[in-house]
Every structure is written in C-alpha cells, then in structure tokens.
Length: 275
Image (tube, rainbow, N blue to C red; front, side):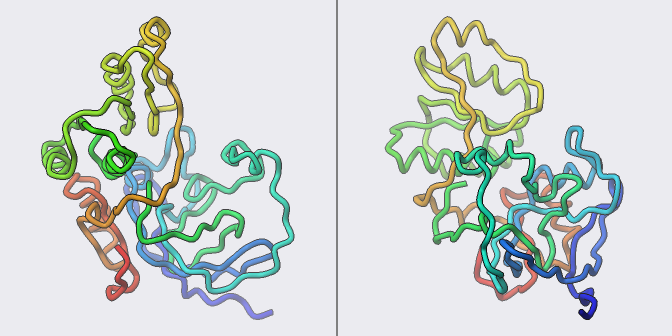
C-alpha cells in the first residue's frame, strides 16, 4: 500500500510557546472509525494553555502534538462498524473508560488539522442550534440555555471588563441555580454562598483539586453536581466574534490569549458559512 501523502495541514505545539503549522499524512480510518474533513475549529482556553505552558495539569507535552478539540466536521470516509461499547461508555461515563481516546490531551493529537480520524461511536450530527458553559463562551451558552428553559432572571459575573460588557448586552440579571463556568478555584466559593438553601450548584470547569465551603453547603443542603450536557435550543452564532484562516492560526491564538473576543474560530476554507 502506498504511503500516505503529507497533505494534512496541522497546528502543532512542540514545547511551551513553540507553535507551528506542519504537514502531516492524511490518516486512514480503520474498523469503527471515520475520516473527517475540517470545518471551523474553536480555540479553547486549554489550547492556549497548552501552547503557552506545554501542559494541562499533569498532562505534559513530551513530543510534538496537534492542538484543538472544538471541531465541526464532515464524514468523508468510513468503514464497517464492528466494535461494541464498553460498559462505562454505555452508561455515558466514557470519560472513565481506560480505552478512550482524548482529543488533544497528551499523548493524543487534537483536531486542528485538515483531516482527522475519529471513533465513529463518538461522532454526533449537529443541528443549527447547539448547547455547549463566567461570561466566556461556555458561560454565555449556559445562561442562554437557562433562559430557554424558562429562568425568569439571571446574573453573570466575570473579571475581564470587555467580556462582561458583551455578556451584559446578551443576558438578563439574575439566576437562582448557580453554574460555575470558570476554571478559577475561588469561583466555587462565590457560587456556593449565594445559592438558595436547597439549591443547586453545577460545576462545569475547575482545577483538579478545589477547596470550597462544604460545611456551608451541607448545612443549607446545597447540592453540587458536575455537568456535561448537549441540547438543541440555543443559537450560539452570536458568540463567534473572530474568524481566522488556518494560515493565520498563531494570530488567532494570540487574540484568544489576550481576551479580545468571546469565541475565536479557525477555518481552512474562508468561504465556509459555518460559524
């Protein structure tokens, strides 16, 4: 079989601060896999962290690694599906499965590349409106969802002034259920204390080890739950503030790092009408 052609333009981090565009071979899908062609890819704060520091917590970049995990793609090639899901995958706890592949989490390459091979079981068809959770993109999507579900009042807190201003124009004023949407550890305290007795704190992001007022939560019966949910009632297009072609990917990362936009996207095809 002929060797794969290196026509797969990819964004690769080699070490902290060292980011390059490189050509990788186009992968061939095996059983239970599909070959995907890139559409826009969003830049996550974890991508920026991986670029700047060469690690995410204890996951250290020890060899060149492709970044990116917020991809919209089209299936262009697939083989017969033979594999059965293991028990943890069946009960939607696939993040605990020892067999799972984590996109852009060392040692697994991400999908900021033109072509990407992926497990077919974990590809999902997306409609025009998608649920995805402070006042960054995750937070705004969470509060949009709360609004759709009937929340009468909402409040958003954040640090960057420009981000807060953008949020203010999009959202209401207060929320009864608290959703922790930032990786800052002290936000769990800021979330638990103002929650109504018997209320709920949903934790979306955070550090591996986090301290918080657990006795306060226990006394006032405040439930704390992790959340990872998809839904189909929220229009996320207004959250996309910047779009860059792949050849200017470094500029896209600098824009995201400096907090100049809400969601920054990278595109291979400038004429692509997806966000």
